Image (cartoon, rainbow over all chains, first blue to last red):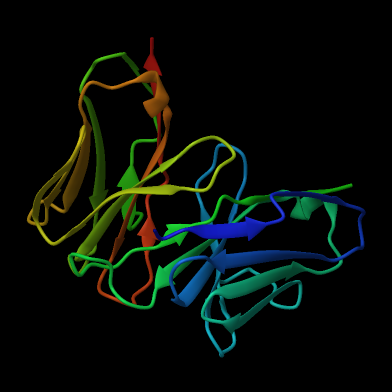
Length: 120
Length: 111
């Protein structure tokens, strides 16, 4: 259980185009989904937090007009990188927090496999 | 001082060794503690989660939380080359609160 998928796993695009990345929780409902960015050999950098049906909360320094996040349902969130540039090339990872607590009553996030974006 | 600190490594051990990975934190309000394993170019995978202080064991993995010292550990027994990855600790104050991740420790288990 607790599987999160991301699509696509790898995308190459030209500078100036927009790219949409999907994040789905396959076997649970997620009240909150998170989007992270990770550069090689560096830790996760939280970009934004999204709750179903409401606007995303962006971390300081993250351009909300460039990284559009939509959380339309309890199982789907999308990240759209608009007018992508080479400096946006990175590994983007989503995670989802289950709606109900996992057994044992604690709180956690489940991560997707990540999407590698290369902007030429 | 960062909220969560973790030795970045790399940590190299021979196969079969016991590995100890650690995180220290400054926020005494943290109650939920997690360990994730991340292979290169993959998303993090949840290994262990614990609430408050104490130990939790799952196969070759043991998670330990010492809230009085603000210190958490992950022990890996009989380490295998397949354990080579980056290990991230994460913690939160309570259900629904934001998570704070450590920077990760890179582990290499040599055959």
